[in-house]
Length: 209
Image 1 (cartoon, rainbow, N blue to C red):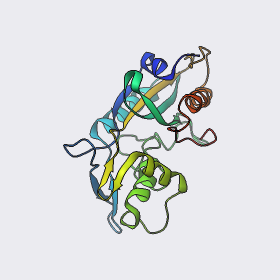
Image 2 (cartoon, rainbow, N blue to C red):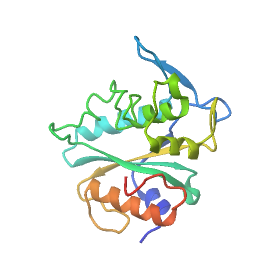
Image 3 (cartoon, one colour):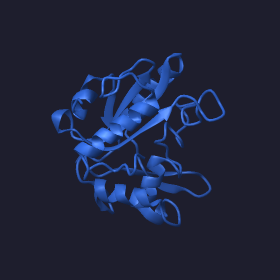
């Protein structure tokens, strides 16, 4: 089985910072969203937004495009350490295009699973980091683990180390780390399993999720 950073380096992928930060590269910028009840939220990096929009727009025009794999990570090259792995599939449960990907250029609340709304990664992580400034109540438990793992301090929200995202388009006939052709769902499972063995303390996925 190939080493995960080596396999990632071989893939067509878009690599960007996840968060927009101050000049120190660690203090994450925040902004208010919403009109009636504005929520303070962590801010995605403009290059991440641009890469997501470009990739999804192109992918939706391709018949063999299944969606994309995403790998949240620190470091790069041989020093790359995966922190969270997931997927966003082209097809929805009821519709030919998932609501997570439809109208991607303006769909900032969902945005390929990395949207600003609650029940999406940036929204729920913002809730865990910023607390009631995002919304009352408790964020889902896994995002408190994310916050502890990724942030040195919560006020102001300051990363331990820079955090990047790899977006990997997945098409029919693509091969996972095993070398076998597999669906997007299959490669997600394979990559999570590989990372869980190689990075048991760093990986934030729990029970394959």
